[in-house]
Amino acid sequence: MEKIENYRIYIQQLLKQYASLGSADQEVETQTIFDTEHDHYQLVYAGWKKRKRMYGCILHLDIKDEKIWIQHDGTEIGMANELVKLGVPKEDIVLAFHEPFVRRYTGFAIG
Image (cartoon, rainbow, N blue to C red):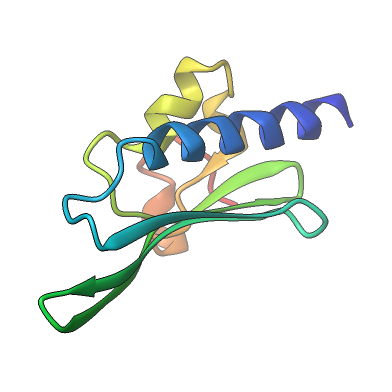
């Protein structure tokens, strides 16, 4: 259970860190969404830019079966590498945005 608690802390820390960078536009808000009961974590942009609605998920991570599942990673830095830097073993990180067949070639967990 300690491992899962650490994973929750790591994910929240990384999402907060990335959110602190903010959006390029003042009217677009960066929001972190932490569902610690079901272990779903997201970073989204929401707002308006020149009368156009801006909304999108930048990051979506889940904890399932004692592994971190990266459902979506819209960053340039790569959350998997950031998690490894924090001490999460590659075999505990699933790049869920790749189809299962491809995951075996990533160096990370298959699922």
